[in-house]
Amino acid sequence: MFSPRRVVVLGSTGSIGESAAKVARALPDQMKIVGISGYHNLPRLIELTQEFRPSAISTKEKTDADLLIESCATTSPAPLVVHGEEGLLTLATLPEAELIVIAIVGITGLKPALAALKAGKNLAIASKEILVMAGHEVMTTAQRYKRQVLPIDSEHNALFQCLEGRDPVTVRRLILTCSGGPFRKAEASHLAHVTPSMALRHPTWNMGSKITIDSATLFNKGLEMIEAHHLFGFPMEKIDVVIHPESIIHSMVEFVDGSLLAQMSRNDMMLPIQSAITYPQRIAGPCAPLNLAEIGALHFEKPRHDLFPALQLAREAGTRGGTMPAILNAANEKAVELFLEEKISFPSIWNYVATVMQQLPSIPTPTLEEIIEADHAARNAVLQLYKRG
Ligand code: MG
Image (cartoon, rainbow, N blue to C red; front, side, top):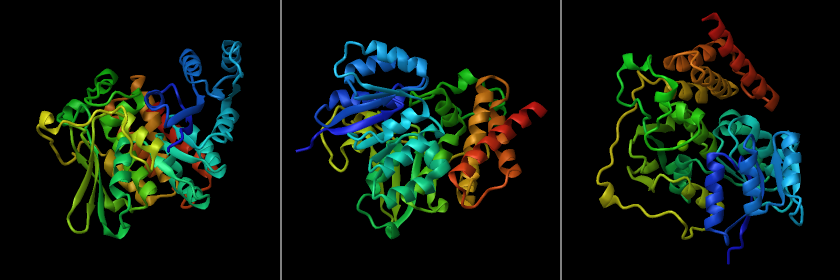
């Protein structure tokens, strides 16, 4: 019998957090939410609290924590309400939790992730930044404490499923699939005129604005290459990308004998989340099966590296290692912010990232502090480039 896995969801009001809530709603015998954190959507956090009755909740601000305590006045037993960075650490190490879902955008999830591993919890990671920036640290900590890091990005979950039980020496390549974004067929001259609202229309996935822009520039896929490198321990040159507009195959593994194993399913984040929550079991859940006859055809294309340099920049950053992936990630985040504010053009996103990667040195085996410093330095370098025009 499978007793419900006791799960903390950090980032419960975001799109991954909401998908995790759907899984918990659909599979109450498999998943019990014991802790949730939210960032700036207090009304939603209160609703989730009332629905799932977690024993601990964390907010960003103390004022929100106070409002949440008020809203739980008649709840018995009253939940533990904490806030800020300390609050996230409290949730990540909550005694009754077995698995911590890290679905906070950005680096905020890193310290909670490391604390969770050290406290004996398994991780299900959706925030790619923490693996991109500190993948080495996260994976060595997981090994040291004999804990699992389960990916809930659809691509990495697919690779995880295809690689399970396979000898790594039999693997020739990991192939990440990529929808290609809304400008897959665009002319080079068109890209300079792309506005935020054009870039925010993603063909297959409905996600937050930062990740949607990353899908349009292909930086999302670049970050995922680095993430795969850390999660599965393969060198960057063994990690490839193919454009697959239907997003039915979520990724593939090519073996030395020429076999290609692919994981296919509908475009629904509930499946990778369910798969991580119930791992190593495979159980019936809310996701409908694929009807391939209805889909009819699947298409594949080479990425257009000339138009979208993000993949090559990510390959370079991952190969150089050290703080370079953190520099790429932070420079991209800052540039996307400027683009969304309509301060810089769409191609400036990758031009800024490329320039900052040349400007800043990479520290080979960085401490966490050095990684954070590199992140700040890269953001600052982007801002300086923008100010200089
Ligand atoms: Mg993905």
